[in-house]
Amino acid sequence: MKANRKFVEGDEAVSAVIGVILMVAITVAIAATVYVYVSGMIGVQQTVPTVQMLASEDTDRLSVINTDAGLNWTTIAIRSTASVAVYVNGEVLVHPGLGVNLTANEYHKFVIGDIVGSDGSIHGSDFIDIESNTGSDLADVTITIVHDDTDTTLGTYKFSSVSARAS
Image 1 (cartoon, rainbow, N blue to C red):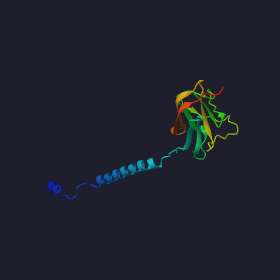
Image 2: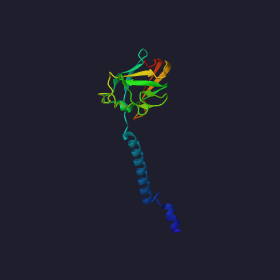
Image 3: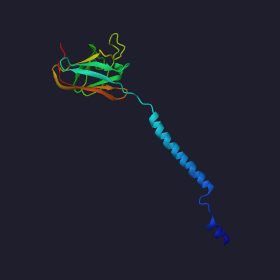
Image 4: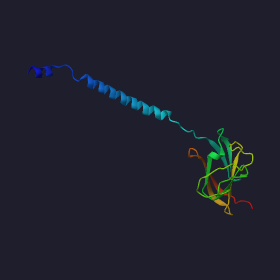
């Protein structure tokens, strides 16, 4: 009888061992939550460059009017809704296997190695000329410029018509 009475009269609700285990578990849970939160904030984020271009319907030209310093043509890709010929700064855009002609609705990376004197950097005075390579004028052509490293659209430009290449 005395044993049962001692149990009923005890003031302690939880043993010290269970209390320590609970405190360690709570500390680990808080530390894990803080780690997940902080690692998401500190993660390496790649910056997306900016390029501002002006589309000219009269000349079928995209003129670079502003760009981030150090941006290179080799990190840029282009897509057209029609089969077109593309020239950068009056020089042929070299694309392995395709030359100057770009297939419709496919992304094509710029390759600038054959443009004489070009280090590949994009400058505010650069331009891209677009011409139809089908032998006749094209209507409603959309050109999309993409930063290939981050797969981010830098601009979409619509031309109501694109002239055929002069022979």
